[in-house]
Amino acid sequence: MITRPMPEATLYSFRRCPYAMRARLALRYAQVPVQIIEVSLKAKPPEMLALSAKGTVPVLAVDGRVIDESLEIMHWALEQQDPEDWRLTADPAAPAQMTALIAENDQVFKVHLNRYKYAERYPEAPMEHYRAQGAVFLAQLESRLQEQRYLLAERASLADMALLPFVRQFAHVDRQWFAQAPYPALHAWLQGLLESQLFTAVMAKPPSNIDL
Ligand SMILES: N[C@@H](CCC(=O)N[C@@H](CS)C(=O)NCC(=O)O)C(=O)O
Image 1 (cartoon, rainbow, N blue to C red):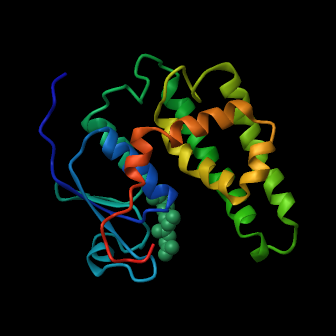
Image 2 (tube, protein in one colour):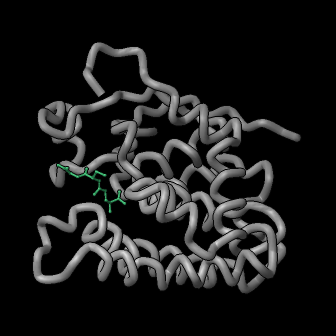
């Protein structure tokens, strides 16, 4: 395999943010040398806000460019190097399928996830209501995973990595509920990815004195 020289990059990140997690997953997988700056969301560094005024993490600064959307960071990383073909380049249907699944995650599932996680802030319905709404997406993932090992193929793709931090967050709201929910293939998928070297590496606690 030919390894291209890579630009030095800086990533403003927050360890537990699912968007930042997916960016870190792709950057590490692509072996992009990156300096990760762990930020406090309550006191964002002025250097980060100068790069991207919207004030969300992750923010990637590289080659004089600023990328402040997690999905775009993932795509940028895979353009640098995609050793296991997360883009599923042999499958012409893959880009559209990935886009659709990730859009459903980001625009629909994420809304239900937030309401489930912070149900006390949405008292117009009980927590179970928000959980059931989110579970519609989980059931859809389960039926994909009954057919194949990963969401779009027998091997991992960008879609798996983009969704993983959000499914993890949903599972962790009430681990007991998730463990008994009827999604055996999803359980196996999640457990396998959470135990992977890649995921554990991007979740390692940064050496810092910030209280995480
Ligand atoms: N669409 C953005 C969303 C990023 C986002 O919302 N990140 C959250 C943390 S998980 C954030 O920085 N929120 C701003 C804040 O909490 O002040 C992306 O995909 O990068």
